Length: 257
Ligand code: MN
Image (cartoon, rainbow, N blue to C red; front, side, top):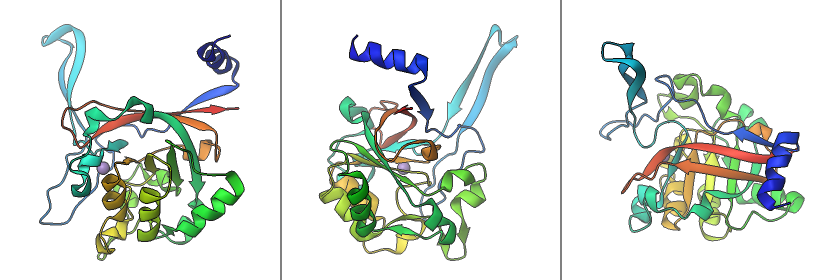
């Protein structure tokens, strides 16, 4: 049987499964909040055009509005100044949107410390157990933060010193950009950088280094707990917004059972 025929048979028989990594989009979907004087993104909203009524007797439809970086979304290299000459979201090679994914799980550590940072040593330890990070693939960083995605305050977890959400150290971000064979980093939090990364040196190192290296971000992922450490294939579908810095995306994973 063909490769795709085998895949479809395995899906029907339950030997393979599709997992939705996408947060539902609604007016309650959390969005990042930047402090003044920075401009903020719109959250998601629906504006009803007609619902089987005098505005459209047989049809229901809406306009939608949202920022490019609302909900589960894709960050293109051009999102950051270090990647300003890189591809926009309409120019991402399709091979990078269907790719192997591995999961590094630090959810237990993040319960103890919401400012937990992934270090190069954690990834070296992970690689000793599971093998190398995938060439041309995605590193998905599980922190348990998706459990907070129903509540913007819990999700952003901010106090007077700013947001406290897990992330990646400066050195580890540089390592992922320059040394690791991955094309992108996926996280459960509102952005690829830690909540406190505004005060790192450099600030927002994941954005700075990954986008500068032509790599991608994928945020507000759900259900990473349902993925194996290795062996999943992710299918990420950002809208091809011409000139766009990113896009809300449907992110799916194919896993073997
Ligand atoms: Mn973003």
